[in-house]
Image (cartoon, rainbow, N blue to C red; front, side):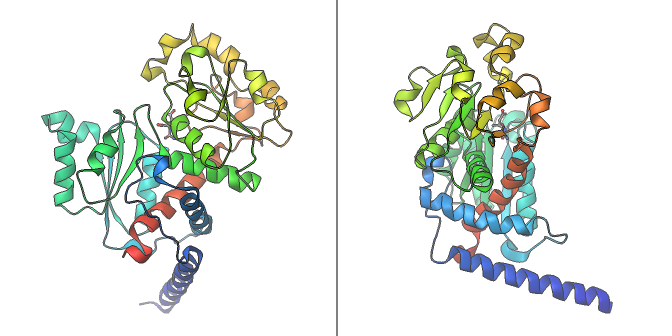
Length: 339
Ligand code: NCD
């Protein structure tokens, strides 16, 4: 080997060893007790804190030019996505690859479920027979990840199921709030938009409640499930100006037209007039408030471009943090003491 190349490899190996030692030290005796992450409720506040501590370290790692590390070499990860995805699928895949996991992608249209009528359960059992080490599943039907998690020995992570939950999105959202504001407990948060069809809201409200945060939830009455405030700790508003007044975080959601949200509003134009986050509405929040959105964004409907481009937008931080959080999750679920 060329001496220059040899030196570079030695430096990378030394850095990686140092990184793994820091990870082990950060984790200490803590463990993620759950096998699966189907709901955010599978995780306690302490589990989430462990994930955030690990993600903080992985955030240093993702900016390194040579970031392939042998932590999970020889393991296999199947990304099973039955619905479209950019951020979630790419970050899970990239996270696996950077940790040296063999990642395999199966999309709905290419699977034997859509083409040959096989059941999801039978596909899951097939994957299990191949000894996949982890399965990441996105599915249009609520409850699918929980159903296959009961059938197979590999851990399952829910990457979004129907209108139900999207737990890893809630983890990256809370991590972003922590990173930007230094704490989660005590924050005032307004979640705005199509709550009814949003799995993101389903996990985020539960996760915020776990940290004692009771968010303001705002949207048209037809897009907020009746009695939400009786099931979760939150305050329901139909007037957006009242909901965002004095908050630390405005969290905008996409209007889910593919999930029939169009039938719940007079028109998209009317909806955006009443609920789009513009500079005037942003000015009603705290002076140092941040704006978040899980993506994909419908510009001028959920968020005005001027808000997206402002220094208050944490949307790209969410994407970067999502990558760090998923690296941390794979490591905690497959690596460390579990290996
Ligand atoms: C969301 C999803 O697909 O659940 N996006 C994401 O994962 N970042 C939200 C949405 O589709 O509106």
